Amino acid sequence: IRRTRTGLPTCTEPRRAGSKYGASPGTSPEKWTALRRAPGEMGFIGDQVESIRSMQVRQVLAQIISLGMIVTSALIIWKGLIVATGSESPVVVVLSGSMEPGFKRGDILFLRMSKEPIRTGEIVVFNVDGREIPIVHRVIKVHERQESAEVDILTKGDNNFEDDRLLYAHGELWLQQHHIMGRAVGYLPYVGWVTIVMTEKPIIKYLLIGALGLLVIMSKD
Image 1: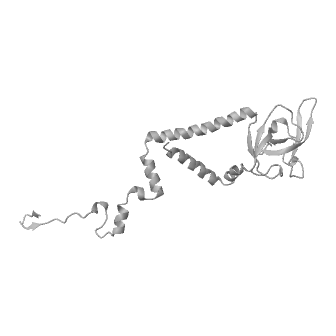
Image 2: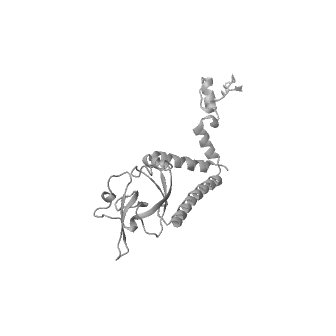
Image 3: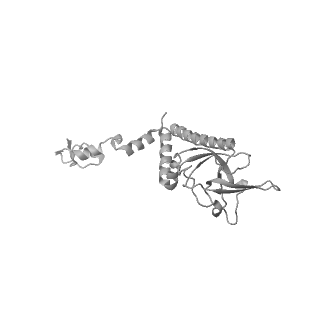
């Protein structure tokens, strides 16, 4: 209670609880509960946002470095396989059914490239000029040139009716040694379907990469 200049006593209205939150005096109990709810009760997304904010800068940097080390290790292993096998692509995925029933779509082939001459009956993976994706087919003919020691190679898919000359670059009837990426020395059935799905549906690949990266960054171990 205070006195005004006229001497008459007046009183100020007490501050209503919760007015600092911007709520009107008539706010219902349900709205009060929502306004006063803790950040951790805002659901999964809110929890993750608060978790990221609470992490120290050093911890975030450490997790990013860990992710970089994982990627670097994978690249080192891949380069090591290239050196050990002599093939520029030691592991390939069968993308079609042209080699059925021996190899089915989704099988993984392990390749090795040696200096031994290519022989009829071997399964090879080769590149064709103008095509980005290598082809895995069987060697059906080999012609050795005595004067130059070069080798002409003709291939065919086990499940195809004709040889691969229609697949070769324009004007080429034979493959040369430099077209061969490697010989098939082993395989794993169906494992390559993961690669096929991620190639045909890139959104799945990006989601997996993002999830793995987020998992590594947010890991506190």
